[in-house]
Length: 275
Ligand code: NAD
Image (tube, rainbow, N blue to C red; front, side, top):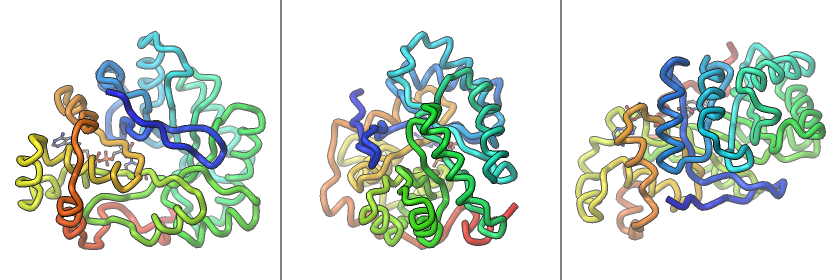
């Protein structure tokens, strides 16, 4: 599978399709990432909070793939926000991963009540200057948080990784990203597999294209312009998910999927999550 590259505002590129490893235990993640790399994935999305950076690092080392062919993202956990603590937490992540640099580093949540996400981002910029982070990004940032980062640092994050799936399509934030030159990365792109994939509206679309509901939803994302990072530990599903580059949804298909929106999140509200 040839995964298209998406241009970032700093001149770098991110693969449009990647592999998410939230909730995959450290002793299982090596096998899952190995399967993904064999299936053609080159982008892996982990986080300090997932507790599996070591296992991801073992899979990277065992793959024998040249570092420059891989795209590795990790995230700074909330309790490590702040300038100095970010530098320390980054050192720990990179050492667990066994890497000299990550392609993308994200602030996991803004936790606005902490009021440290700007200082955190300043530390990211220092690490980028040192060549240890290729691209600086954020996750779960709302418009107000993005505006503040841009105003106070003069730098626009390359990526905002946000909850996004047909039930919660984030139209406003996507429009703001497009205006600001921020790439939208969708987390829980399959709606965590719960309910969404069983929606009766998806079955006929999938059947018409000879695809599965999961593939239809992932195709909807890439036609919207999102970067996606679906998770699975099942080898057949890992291969199935990335196999979406040989068909196209019609405008009617897209409209039927758009109609699944309920506006309800699966995850926390970024304005009020402060732990
Ligand atoms: P997802 O939407 O990728 O759904 C994964 C689940 O869907 C699987 O556990 C499985 O039950 C099911 N599934 C996967 N492939 C399937 C298939 N082909 N057919 C049927 N069912 C299938 O959910 P996710 O893991 O929450 O999100 C993906 C990634 O996004 C995470 O692993 C993580 O890397 C990232 N993420 C980031 C944040 C954040 O705050 N930044 C939050 C949640 C997730």
